[in-house]
Image: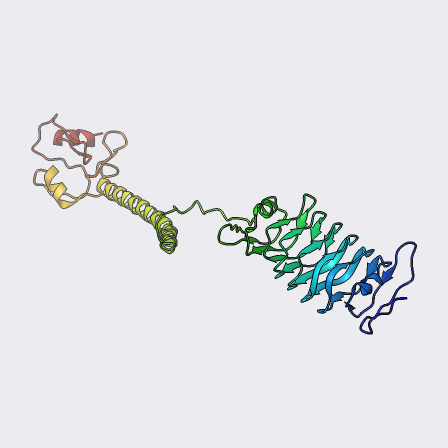
Length: 339
């Protein structure tokens, strides 16, 4: 058995078939390649793995298929890291390794947390050709000239941020965003000679067709004008309807008043009309006639008052069609009185 640093606490669980789970509650600290080789027979490491800052050279993690904790490679002197068998990892953080120029995750399929590779100034190419899914955010910053994920990637459930101080081609990452692979926000920024940045697709709200759009150089002015128009429409329509209803009510009232006046004129006579149609005789009561059902006209009921001037000829009769006033000679009245 290889001697291990006292900082490494290891527990190997019972082997079930061909599977062996190793690790414990405490993180595993890796100070040399020998420390990693000790776990080459373990399919699963349930602990987090932390690389010591004094680690240098080329480091390889063989045999391990799954890391249940975080794989953390930070502030080391290593020049390369290879994990040819690793298929699943919880979190991967590779940050600020001044000499790191190569990463190899050939069979990595799933990252259940964050994937962060940042500030490794000599690392220019980054390839994750076998990745299927990343459950949280992806942060890639450095001096990259090439970043690729391959055609198998099905989804990034968080944000993707890529930034490079060199001429990075953002085209492949733009394609991931356009295809809806990135569920969160997306940003890719290269140096001043080549840059690309775009947000991830989000639902857009349609403009309200109820209000017209007014073009202006000032967007805030557009907003204020549209707001004022909206208020005008909101108050103007009810006010216009109220005016129409009021006008109809007044017209109806005037019609009823005119009808009432016309009815009163048909049933009541004024002194002026009596004088006009009686040739100077002012008589306001209708002439009483006996046995009017047989011989006389009905007077003073529907057509007003009838007056009989004594000076008219026997057969003369004047009929006023407007006022409904009839004048009969005295002979006709006497004839009507006789049985």
